[in-house]
Image (cartoon, rainbow, N blue to C red; front, side, top):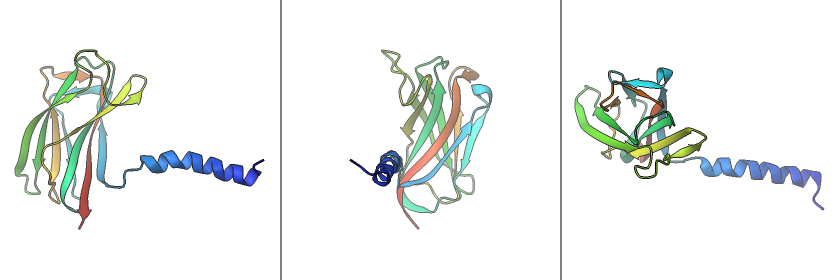
Length: 160
């Protein structure tokens, strides 16, 4: 028979193990911006200042899209701009982020219920210190319903 003290230690270990496994040790930056009333309007540019990032390349930059089942399409076109500290455009790219499987309609990404989060890798392996990332929805519709928040995640690299 296990003593109460050992049982408590076992429970603590069982509860902390998933949390410690889920922690990403190489995450350098992550930030999400909520979309007001879950309607991403075509004129709304989401900007992320990564001036606190102090890293030497290479890094992997990803866009995260949090959405729900009221989103009308199977994908999302996003224009991605990376600008340096002088606002010079370093990367200007159009991304096609899949949110639902185009054949089955099954939602992609992780989540539960009607909410999911999908990550997609952005082009480029460097994010200069003091730069900014800008995201613009590039669909044919002026207002996209069902997009809850959009974020940026930067992983890898070595600290400077």
